[in-house]
Length: 112
Length: 112
Length: 112
Ligand SMILES: Nc1ncnc2c1ncn2[C@@H]1O[C@H](COP(=O)(O)OP(=O)(O)OP(=O)(O)O)[C@@H](O)[C@H]1O
Ligand SMILES: Nc1ncnc2c1ncn2[C@@H]1O[C@H](COP(=O)(O)OP(=O)(O)OP(=O)(O)O)[C@@H](O)[C@H]1O
Ligand SMILES: Nc1ncnc2c1ncn2[C@@H]1O[C@H](COP(=O)(O)OP(=O)(O)OP(=O)(O)O)[C@@H](O)[C@H]1O
Ligand SMILES: [Mg+2]
Ligand SMILES: [Mg+2]
Ligand SMILES: [Mg+2]
Image 1: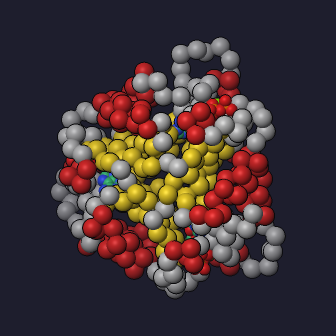
Image 2 (image 1 turned 60 degrees about the vertical axis):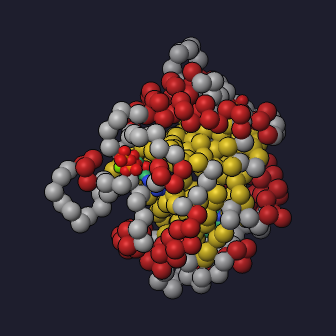
């Protein structure tokens, strides 16, 4: 399994949720984050100040998926988060060794 | 080493902390999250509305552990978080390459 | 690639950001967390109460880096977060399978 971790623009969250649902995803975790990328936050917030790094509010979306669904889930998030503007976000993928569904005790892909 | 990542019901946090302490865990990180699983949050929040996905408040607990402790730590969290009701949570495990204890510079399992 | 995950003292965040910038890092994600380590939060908060675990406010900093930069990035964070006092923090590293820059669709180290 894989953990797909997306840092996206907050106003894109609804579109990302819809795209994930359409891709057949059964669960996700959302949390708040702040960050910057190659522009150090400048172009996203204001112009002019050159020497301070601005942390810009973002939303983190995490989805644990079966290996065979990982590429489609990444594509769904990227497609829904994309506006073509600076600060659109980053999506990274991490290996997952095991998952447990607490209520039932199921493990592995069955727990998703 | 492994990172055990648990998304649980907020009112179970105290029980999870106690179970982890009883399992000999030396540290943990707690943060806020929201999410949904197979019921899309509906049954946890209200009934009736069919087409909106509800994000339900959860707590994230993360524990970095030695490989040989990972299974026991997962079991401790699952046991403490379990109520048998929908929304009890998910626990997943990710490989960890290295850990550093900042104050001492220790690395690997000694840093835990 | 690697995900470097640091849990540090909140008042060290500016120093950590500067050290990462000096190390050539192009982006990072910052979020709030709470936690405890080997002192169960006691020494950091107050003395005396023996049987409650205190969660102490911390800051999480995450940096996705190319494999060859991972060691230098860990060292930069550890150096900037270190005060020699209890509660200085933990830094752990996780393998990353893939990264996408949402705006451009770039993948892998080019997406960083
Ligand atoms: N190397 C990184 N490690 C961890 N998080 C990152 C990294 N780079 C970016 N991020 C996170 O992703 C968010 C979005 O980054 P952003 O889209 O600005 O990346 P970028 O490479 O600068 O692309 P663009 O040129 O389109 O702005 C940041 O606010 C930050 O939270
Ligand atoms: N596939 C997933 N990826 C990431 N996070 C998830 C995933 N599934 C669930 N979660 C997180 O776990 C939390 C709890 O999920 P939940 O217990 O409702 O799972 P479930 O499979 O629906 O089990 P149950 O049938 O017992 O409700 C969610 O609120 C969400 O934060
Ligand atoms: N095993 C662990 N798993 C997950 N997070 C941890 C773990 N240990 C510590 N942390 C996180 O790191 C933060 C800082 O820990 P801390 O620096 O107190 O570690 P320590 O080993 O007790 O070192 P020190 O003796 O210098 O205090 C904690 O508040 C917690 O958020
Ligand atoms: Mg950018
Ligand atoms: Mg559910
Ligand atoms: Mg400590």
